[in-house]
Length: 253
Ligand code: FPP
Image (cartoon, rainbow, N blue to C red):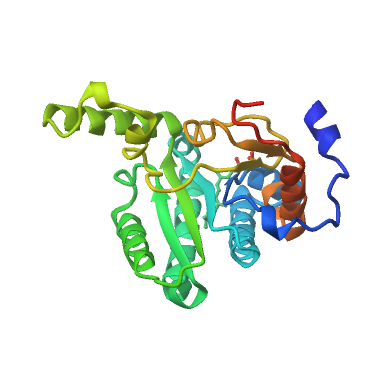
């Protein structure tokens, strides 16, 4: 058991985060669905269904707390290697929750964005993603934005951004001399969205797995053994309390 886990255990239990010092952007690797299902003798797909419910609960909880941005890792560029049935269950779940989001977005004050290369997705799902982004962009009283990483890989995102920037150089809209971090950020999927302050990975794995590597450069990390389907509001409270105990120096003293 890593030192991380011992340090986190028991800390913040039952304690509520200070509403005045919440992160602006929380990013979560929704990991452990398969193990959650296995422990119950269920198929892995049941774990994803439970994980999708947890996603909904946590999105509403973040909105209610007043956290403006939540980003979740739903499907990576590597997840296509999983059995076809599992991939199609995840796509079906995304479709189901997107349809629901489309209906409720306006009333519930949500926006939605997708990070990743949507091109290889089934065309109907891709259209739905674009429709949800478009509908969300018109929600004037949005209190919360959910970003879903779909067919997302951090290195792939950086390569796509580099390609787009290089093309802009060829047409004279950009020049290598004027390249700064801020300029490059405009070419990333996350353009216009603040970097995550807190990155959470449940299920005991201590890896970033190609999740927002550029944007997480100064993020705080929180790891827990809890599996994603069991990660409820009380678990998020613990992560937020832990985050609020940290001192962020961004390279300063
Ligand atoms: C990782 O757990 C989880 C995924 C690759 C899929 C996440 C997808 C969902 C929660 C459902 C759809 C999402 C939304 C936003 C509605 P794992 O399968 O790798 O778990 P394991 O490590 O225990 O096997």
